[in-house]
Length: 121
Image (cartoon, rainbow, N blue to C red):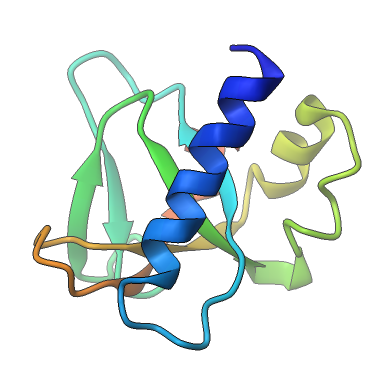
């Protein structure tokens, strides 16, 4: 996907989140669901754990609004200067926080995804 289109999608994602009612959320990193097995979806969890409550599920190709926070002290904004493959490598075994609308009713909340199934967008 070309850089212009990626930038436009990232701005749309960030703008949508900012107007969704959370005054604290100012910027998001756009990452995409990837490498989920055929016919499966990536679960968004309430807490960074496989045993945590499932909030939603998204298929490959879905663009996620990442808060930038991952377990182990990884900050998506701090690693954004790295090549995409290195960014993906840094989060591979981490849980990363997303900002999403699980009920699709305008009530955004945070959740967690496993880094193995996301890549920079």
